[in-house]
Each structure stands twice: as structure tokens, then as C-alpha cells.
View 1 (cartoon, rainbow, N blue to C red):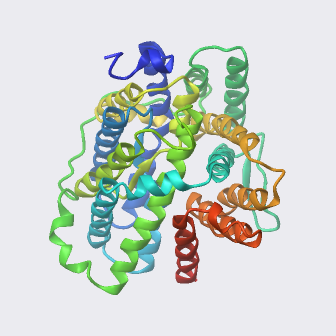
View 2 (view 1 turned 90 degrees about the vertical axis):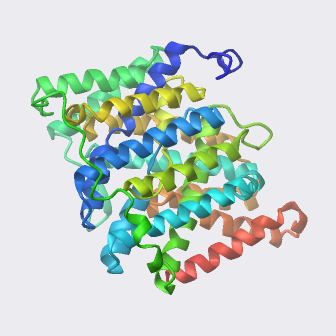
Length: 431
């Protein structure tokens, strides 16, 4: 087992990988609660979506762990589940069954692109400075999500964002968890992020901030309301409207996943010579999970950026992903316990991981304006637009423009020029 997962080469152990997997599970566990809430607003059954979400994570995480040996959790994308519900089902008045079929078709196309190694080729030709910018940008983005979930940063009509109520008990708990975890980390305590979350959850229950679960074991909800619905609606996907929806699912998920994969591989120290080893297998795993998830009854899956919590806890191999899968398999039976993994418990981990990822900025060549501006825009626009894909798109548009302005035509791979044009067309379409 240790040879299969290359423990010695990557400097890890069973204990370290297990702690990392459990840490990622805790960071991702919220998706089992949030995803059903979001998709239920499109008319889907909450219980069925809960089970479909867990099973898609189990399958996707196992695949990426065993095929690519990556310490990554695969799960429904938070951005794309909102797009599914509010833009497609509610905004375009499309039934959830038809929208789910669109997810299924986009997943099939993903599998084809992955098998042809087109996705891998695109990721590998991205300039290294932009790769570091993507990693740093995602760091700022998830830190912003953490600050928002903790109530430290709130919305404001006057200034868009503002400081939250620091006297609020949940916010106080989140700040305590953040400080505790930082202290544990700087003192090099193994599993600091996991320990910080566990201690905070216990304190939260004792203080009455977090509701203690009424029971421990619960029945697994049936997937009957959603399972296999995609196969009875395939005849409805050939309309111009649904083709546009499939394209958007495909386009946004492609770069959401690419951005997360680049950031995670860089954080785990897996990137070599500006390329990600086994990227093709990793991409095949996440695209297969999308297909399976759609059949079960959930929206597009992707590499979860919360995986960086596990990497920060020491995860370096696919055994971490196997542990993630095992935890979600157990979670199917212990769903009442998930209620203690609240936002104030998990958000400090996101802030800390965001800080670790933001360290990627030091790898960017800030002395060259033609690199600094596209990198800066990529980083800045991810949190400001609340979209990884948008930040990547704007950076990919600017980078060829600045290079062309200097006459460095051959310094850019032709694929980057194609992506620049594609992203411009994408923004024109959105407008």
C-alpha cells in the first residue's frame, strides 16, 4: 500500500495521510448540507440530493486517489450548483430534470476531452507565472469565503463589504478557532487544522453556540426521486437554449477545476517543470464523477479547493483521498452529526489555507509589467467577482495582449491565443 501511494518518495506516513483525509472531510462536510438546500430550490428532493452528493464525492475522490495519486476531494462545485438552480432552473425556467441532463452531457464531453488529453494539454501550456497567480488568487478567494462564513466580513450597501459584528457568539467562536489553529500551526503541532476544528466544535456545543445532535445515526435517504432522471430527458437538450447551458457548464467547470487542480498541485509540491504529473488521470477522475453525480442526482463536480486544508495537514498522496471517501461513506449513516460542522468551525481553516496558498505570489516575476498586470488581475478578480473562472478568464485575455504589445509573439503557445479569443467570446455571450 505504501509503495502504491509512494509514501517514501513524498515524505509521508499512514498517520499523516489519515489525519489529512479527515481534515479535508471536515472542511468539505458542509457540502452535504448546503448542496441539498441549494438544489432543492430548483425543486429537487433534499434527501435524494444528500445521498447523491455523498456518493458523487465517494466515487470522485476514490478515482482521483487511485488513478492519479492526488490528495484531493472531488465534490459538487458551489459555484455551479448555484448556476444550476438560480440561472438555469429559475432564471431560464428549465426543469431540474432537463438541467441535470445538461450536466450529464457536459460531463460526457469532459470525459472525452480528458481521454483525448486536451484538458491536460491546455493546463500544461499555461505560463508558470499565471499558474502561480491562479493558486494565489484561489487563496485570496477561499480566505474571503472563510471571512464571510465566519461573519467577520459582511455585506454593505455603502461600501459593498464591511466589518461584521465581532461580539456575535458564532463570530467569536470562529475567531477563537482561527487563533487556536494558528498557535498550533506555528508550534508545528501535527494535524493542527483538524485539532483546531475539533476543539472549537466541542467548545461551541458546550457554550450553546452549536446545537448538539439529537441523535447520532440516521437512515440513508432514498435517491429514487432523482436517480436516472437524466436518461428520460435526453431529447430536450438539442435546443439552442440548452446547448448554451451545456456550453456554460462545460466552460466554467473546465477552468474552475483547472484552477483548483493547479493550486492544489502547487500547494502539495507535486508540480514539476511547470507541468502537473498525472494531470490527465486527475481530470478523467473529476469528469467521470460529474457523469456519475448527474445520474445519481447532483450538479457538476470538481476538485474541491477545501482539499488544501488536508494538504496543509500533511496530505501528499492519493491515500488522503481514499480516507476522504471512507469518511463520506460513514457520513451517510451519521448525517445528524454533520450539524456540528458549522461555518464558524470550518471557516478559520479556509482563511488559514488561503494564507498558505497566497504565498504563491512570491513565485511571480513582479519586475516585468507584462507579467505583473495579468497576474494581478487574475488574483484580484477571483474574490471580487466571486468566481475562479472569471479571474482566470481575465488573466488569460490580458497576458497575450501584453506579450503581443512587446512583440513576443512566439513566447505564447498558440493555445493561449485561442483561449484569449474564446474568453472574449464568452464575456460577449454573457453580456
